[in-house]
Every structure is written in structure tokens, then in C-alpha cells.
Length: 175
Image 1 (tube, helix red, strand yellow):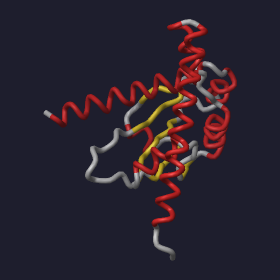
Image 2 (cartoon, rainbow, N blue to C red):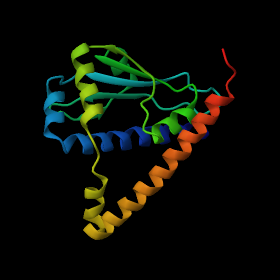
Image 3 (cartoon, rainbow, N blue to C red):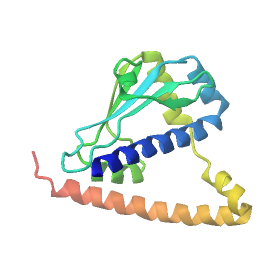
Image 4 (cartoon, one colour):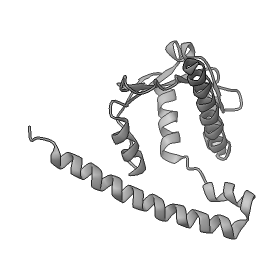
């Protein structure tokens, strides 16, 4: 029974991540234009070194559509696909804290250099305008206030993450 629930949760996670990526991509015409030159190619994302005591993460693989957006596909797509991105996930807590602190994780990329260049451009240039999305739900003033609170909370979490990371580094034995 747990296997069935885990499989369903994986499918939902991939679906939601795909919707979020496409939402951000659709807000930037240059992004979809860049991806259109790679129609039909696949991008696979693997979390390398994931601890065995945690539930296995889903396989992430996307095919680029004629609209320059992404559609989820089976992991086999990524195996023969154009680009594979591997993220070192051997320490998920440090990975999450680093993400909160605004650090990029250690990654390895293999495959098509042109597609890799365009994906790197996306990482460097795309931003999600959360305030604009919230504004459609609660109005401009409330959206602005919610985002201000979010910025304060995110700043505090980043500071705590940096402090914890610093403590972790200082506790490591010297080599």
C-alpha cells in the first residue's frame, strides 16, 4: 500500500514541478524562444547519492515542446535524452539549507552543450514574480505586504542556514 501511495506522490510532485517551471518559462518570451530550438530533446534531473534511509525521490525528466515549454516524460527519455543534470544530494539537509541561503548545489552536466548553455541561461536569468501571482488572488496591497513578510522570513532563514553551515564547517576536523 505504501508503495502505491509513494508512486502517486511522485507523480504529483513531478506534475506540480512541471507546472511551476512552465509558469515561470511562459512569463519570459526569451526563455521559451531559447527552448524552442531544442524541440523534442529531453532533460533529465537525477539526485545522486540520495540517502537510502529516506524514501527515494521521483525520477525527473522533461521533453521540450514546440511551445518552448516542458512536458514530463518517463525516465527512459532522459537516459537517451540530450541533457542529464545530476545534483549531489548525499546530504539533503545541507542541500536544503544551501538552497535557502541562495547557494547553487554541486551539479554535474552531461550531454548536448548547446542545450546545457541554454539551460544555464535559464538558471541565471529566470525569476518567479511571486508578488504578481499573489496579486491576482488578494489584491496589490495585500500581495505586497505578504511578499514583504516573506522576504523578512526568507532573510532570517538564510541567516540561520549560513550560521548552521558555518558551525558545521568549524566542527569538521582539519585535514
